[in-house]
Image 1 (tube, helix red, strand yellow):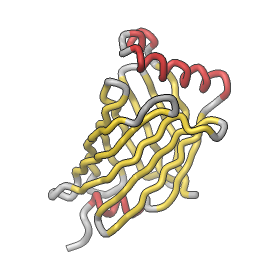
Image 2: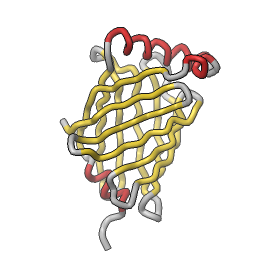
Image 3: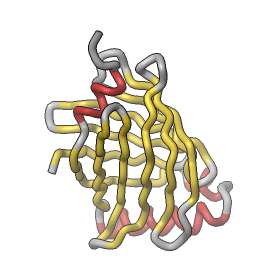
Length: 166
């Protein structure tokens, strides 16, 4: 029997990837109802993006057998604004995964988190539920001819990037 869809999916992404990270607030009203720390961190990021263009997302996937480690940084002008580091554990069904790690901003402390994802049977896309800034961030990734398309949405934001192997 071959490797599970999740193992095949993450093996395809071992290495370093980067791309232009476009972030925008889709509902200032919903953001205004968020925690004050969320507003203080997200609003400046949205304003910076609008005034000076997108940030950069750089990510790296490492493998040890069927265990994976994933590190992501969002930066602007070479300054890291946000980063995550997590381990990825593949479930017994071969399609679900559990992520456990830390996430934090340049201006705050890192906090632990756990998230879940499901990889499609063909090992070409994934759907994640990630706690972020007090809400569930839904992330969808899809392998496309140019790399990995990534879309992230919350009740008040939308972000996208096309990650290419570097």
